[in-house]
Length: 218
Image (cartoon, rainbow, N blue to C red; front, side):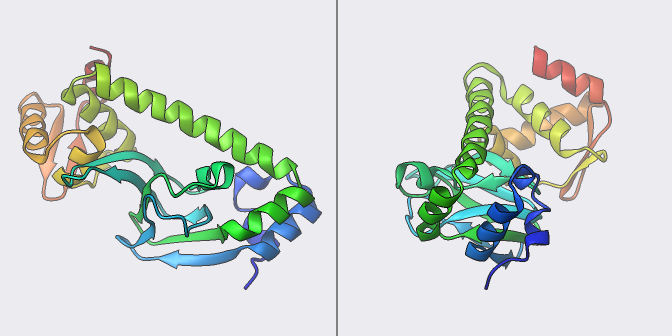
């Protein structure tokens, strides 16, 4: 079933497309809904297409052979993901899992060539998103290579606690910070003893924004 053009207008990435391009793109797409914890894409699988998030949050990650997981990014409302297979015809680069009730528009892989032939300006949207994602991955690599677990955890908490509270489990924080749950637990307790955060069941309350920000720079 095709998507209503007004639904596509909710995605800021498509704001520059002309009405004809929006109409043709809408005809090739469908709206899909996902429950929290449900998988949208599986890494290294070639069957999945392009997604644009209408509402919700999606966690993108890779998993090692020993089961360790590294979160690459969190895709937010308005963002696109799983663009790479459209560029190189390869498999999905990451597993995508909904972190909240999520609605997406979905463009099947087979539909993209026709869209690009008719509206090559759509390729610029994809290239801009790929460039933005590459920059985000460069920051992640810098964090993993040069910053301590405390600094990486501080960055995550500041990003997630926009309203003062980060609702993430220790396992989720470990996957985001590139470490293990035990180290996250120990680091959070240290931060709590220092008055930087307050720990509650399933939540971390940020008490000292400036103190956490200072950890990132050290």
